[in-house]
Image 1 (cartoon, rainbow, N blue to C red):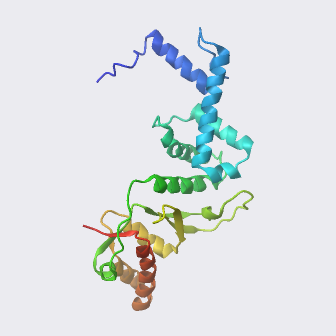
Image 2 (cartoon, helix red, strand yellow; image 1 turned 180 degrees about the vertical axis):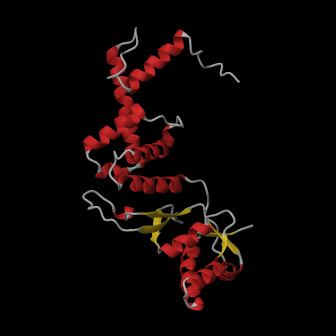
Image 3 (cartoon, rainbow, N blue to C red; image 1 turned 90 degrees about the vertical axis):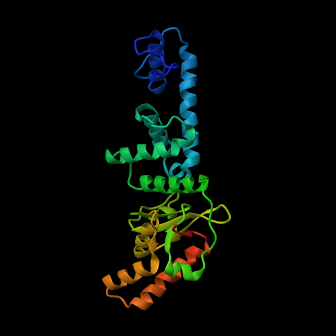
Amino acid sequence: MTNRNSSPPDSELFKLQTDFTQHLRNPDLHPVPDGLDPRRMGIYSSLLIINISALASVFLPVVHAITSSEDWDSMIKEFFINYRAQAPYFPKLADEFLQFLIGREGNNCTPDYPVPLAHHEWIELCLYTSEAELGERLVESDLTTQRIRLSELAVPVAYDFPVHQIQKGWQQDIKATHLLVFHDQTDAIRFFDIQPLIFELLKDMSQPAGTHIKTWLTNKANEMNQASDSFVAFGMDLVNRFNEERLLEIVG
C-alpha cells in the first residue's frame, strides 16, 4: 500500500527532504539545500544534537557521568550522523543508543564497561516504565508444588563487571557479577546480588512455562554431588526472599 503522505523518490520535494535531513545529520559533508538559510539550518542541527544529548544523559545518567565531555559529545555526534534508528520516537532513544554502543564496541571504539553499564541502566529504565503489576505473595506450599514463573518486573542479568558499583572515578574491576534487578513495591528499582546458580534458576523461571523449583534444585544438587536436603533448603530460602518482594507467580 502506498503512503499518500510520502513523496515519490524522483520528485523535487523528495530531493529537498533528502538534502535537508542529510545536512542536519552531517553539515560538514552535505551543504545547505538551495533556498534555505544556513544560519537557521545550523541552529536547527545544533538543537537536535543538544536534545538527543540531554535525553541520553537522562536515560543513561551513570554512563554520562563517567564519560568525559569530549567523548560523550563525540558519541552523540557519531550516533546522530551514522546510526539508523529503527524507531522514530524519543522514548525509544535508550534502546537505540544501547544498540549503537554495542555496534561501536564491536568496532573497538568503546571501552569495555560502558556497554554493560548502558545495558544495566536500560534494564532499570524498562522496569521503571513497565505497565506490569506485582502479584500477591504466594503461599509457601505453592513454591514447592507448582510451576513458578518470575514476574515481568524482575530481570536476572550477568556481567563481567560489577556494573551496579560503577560511578565517576571508578577503577575498572573485572569480576563476574550476577544480579536480579526488580521494580519493588515502593516503585523503586532495586537489585539482589545473586550467585551464578541462582541466576541459572531465575533464567529458567523467566521462561513462559516457568519451572518446578524444588525439582530443579534437587536435580542440580544431584549434578553437583551435593546433599539434596540442605541444598534445596538453601535454594528455597532465597526463593522465599523473592516471594516476599512479590516477584513470583504461579504458571497457569
